[in-house]
Image (tube, rainbow, N blue to C red; front, side, top):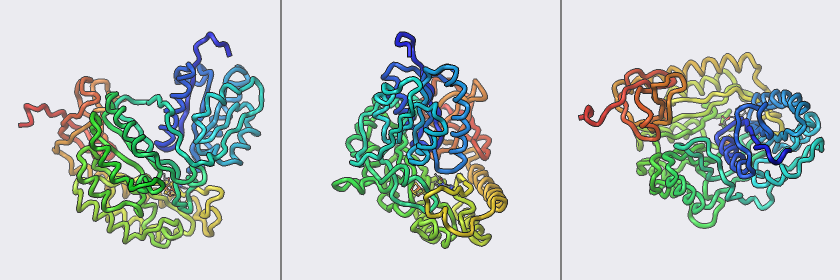
Length: 450
Ligand code: 5AD
Ligand code: SF4
């Protein structure tokens, strides 16, 4: 590559917030090498695909996109192509990419971001694919990777990595490894710095944040971490995800209740409402325990918003099992639900279970579930009509230049007309038109509030 010309990179990210945050770290590393970000693949000297493998659909999209790069690489042999993330953490996938897409220069694992500069330096034009996915034996969290954050108001902060739960359908524990918590001081120092840099909201990330600290010496746990985060100056809102119902302690409920910066929102994946399916999923709770927990949370924090993930068509799911899911959704009345068709993941216990549900039944159930969850979301939102909510303004609406967009503490999207000076600030908005996906409202000025 011509050392004098300014170098450009482009990162394409699939998957969860942890991946989005990993991409910010990748951006941090490549920026420090002198690359600057561009949107279009055609303009980039370095293209990085950060992949997801939680469902087959995500993997297929990556392969489709990779196929397209072949032509680009043929035209510009200097172009460096790297593929990383959860997909490549599976050895057979990494080998498949190296064999089937030999124009890929680097395949690296989720825990190899700190080595990216070295990997890029080792790329030789028309050399073979460099594969570096070896699991970090020490199991330590690598600190100090600079993040080039995609936003100046909201920031992602990883508090732990990996997952030890081994839900039978899920590939995450195999690709992200065992649970590893970051040291509390490292997290708090990052939050302090973000507060000083002007960030207003942080989302604490982990596949299972409630087991934060279990692998650390001492008494650390997630509830204590939240209480300490609540004291960091400058930060006005704290979110966290994801919580496993089996680990959500009463201490955590109290911490959410007591900490004024902690948002009134808990994402609590239920996955299924049927006890026999929950057992086959290895979720380690029953529908009764989940319901009891949801009611306990709502009793302690009445304005809480509960959201969830649900899988439809897990192997062996009968119509009656599915009705149990519909039933629990009607009881808990989630503010929103992410619904997924079960996707067979090689190497997971569920993949070799019997009675896989035919696709047309999965789709039919998904439709019924979506109808129900959307109806409940709309009903929950309609209660907000004429109510005044506090909104952290995130920016100008994508569709209307004179409209601002932000979120409530309960994570609902709000649109209202105002001026850009409010971006990054908390505004009071009266909801005039609550809809299913977002709420429309008008700004309340201090004087008109009284
Ligand atoms: N099939 C469908 N959905 C899945 N999820 C995880 N694994 C699978 C799978 N094999 C969903 C779960 C999880 C969310 C992040 O993705 O609902 O909570
Ligand atoms: Fe996957 Fe279950 Fe871990 Fe979530 S808790 S990442 S669904 S194994």
